[in-house]
Image: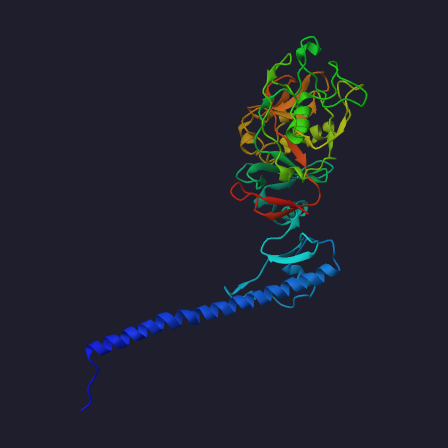
Length: 404
């Protein structure tokens, strides 16, 4: 008569089977996942090789999408990721290593020129990003609307800037926070009444009434903040009232991207009771108070926003007021450049020797004495070779940029 298994034997068998399951099943699963990952790597290799072929007859590209490779028949069908069974999308980015050798690296993000990226967003997702074309003859692409709508944040190692848009054919940025309150220009009490002058820079060989050639704010921004050497004295009031200079300097990564040969227009007007389009034209004009000594165009790295930049940062479907009337609550709530604080702009009052345009704390655009204590917020134009390497432009996920 055959005996059955004892309880002890049954338990022993179950224990052995459990050990086998614990040991073998994960290995089987791991083997399957490993094979999927290997297959995925092979597919990526196919994509990168296709990009190399595309690059051979398009040597100026910095990135190529899978969609382009499909269109060019360098990839013959949609590719599926075996790991998650999803369609593979993204780009092959073209970079150069330290030895000067081209590298073709697949990524789900594209190393596309920032200007091209903005143009593409305007053409495909303008509303979602707060992008519009202004009504000037130049048809600049700008970010407009409230902070909740506009996706134009850029971070340079934690230093936050905002994209104004593509203005005069170049991407223009403005720093998110002011360097502090300083005079646009100040002067001794016996020079223009101590009010300072609204001349950003004089014509070569000419000087202002106090013997200088540049506005104090120009020196502060370009020789100090950008150049690394602040003047011995900075000013924050009438009659050359001295104030401690800023201690902040431009981020080195951003500095390498700044167009040092950008052209800044210095034309002015006598009133802010005009529409942004009109102010845009005045800025690019040659009307200034001191026509014999003041430049109407200046070339350099760091300037300020224009009154028109502020005007076009508002959602014009919500606010159609003149700049003077931007204190309207609807205008303020739909303007990402409104900071509830005073801020200098670049344009002079052409009817005065010492009055300069500014953004008021109430949101209005008006004019202030050059010696006044207003916020200094740097603005720059970027070189044309700047690309986007990460981010979507929100405050939580700002753009990360790189120069080619």
